[in-house]
Length: 269
Image (cartoon, rainbow, N blue to C red; front, top):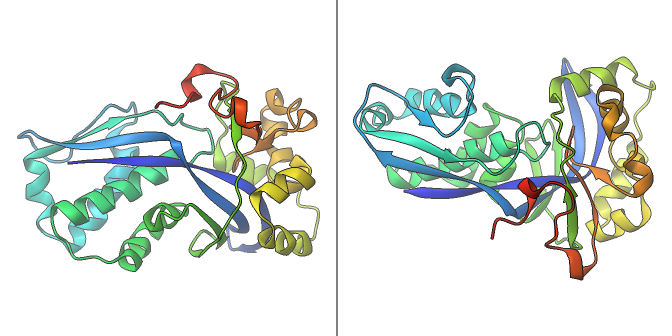
């Protein structure tokens, strides 16, 4: 009982409004299959939920939220986890803007739905995922590429053209909440709605060929203020995924598997 949970990249990310404390976005998500975590359900008797392979306290782990949400609807969840534990093999770096936690949550929902025959369709799983994290529905639907809007709940698949990409992880973590807070503190007073609409109509290949990194991601400037190590990268043609810290750029076919930067982001295949 095992599932691979892939990373994602934000080719662009524009903030287009507020909903209370939330930021409304328009973004292009692409699934990055070369980098993934693996979740395995292992038979083992015990007392309640057990998660191994990740150094996050149980109460703070996003998979604990999945467990509690499912247990509210499906009573068979509790006895199942009296007889099984969760093992995670982490490859997606934490604090990297690659959606590892959200992908893990989506993967566990799908795996349990299959193993326990819970009968949820994709829409039901996505609705459940949206109560856990804004990026979870994208991973539930498993589209190769999609335009994502609202706080992550509006997902439209895109027939995209995605060039080979080189990734770089600079060895730092960017706190998502802190980056969004910094952006709101320096809010320019208006949203770039025209550019957001234009980007949503373009392919990823066109965006990376014609749009500057700081234009493509509204959070890049805020992330640089909090993590000065990111400052040299826009001029070198690197884009930021989400709130960071993973950087990426178009790559020639010859170096698509080099995965520039740290070995931890090399293609695990």
